Length: 148
Image 1 (cartoon, rainbow, N blue to C red):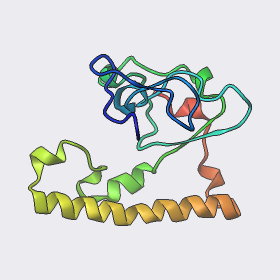
Image 2 (image 1 turned 120 degrees about the vertical axis):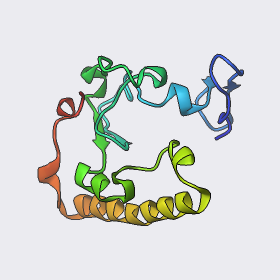
Image 3 (image 1 turned 120 degrees about the horizontal axis):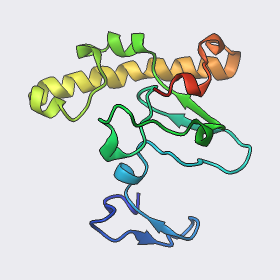
């Protein structure tokens, strides 16, 4: 949070934040969206909640159809995404995004986003069932199947 707003190539990053590993920190909007490097060098699993099963490296390259991540960099990553049927069931059949500011007025946008926020508890409940009881294990796929 301390480095939020430190936009790479435009503003200086924040160096050596107290309590964090030494180094330079930037806003994640460009550097962290859609990683394509090792998340963790150890054998521990990395939980990566994401809005889509499609992961495209590079914020500025997200519209290039040939861009894809190196699956080897995700060998220990568990990508958790909502199902397509869940997304389709949302108002407008999509997850809210910045385009909503152009398409919807303030009240409509707020109401839409609130519905999606409320519906997100379903995802949390499903994830808890998976962790506690294994419900949903049959839907888990190897990561390379979701990289397209």
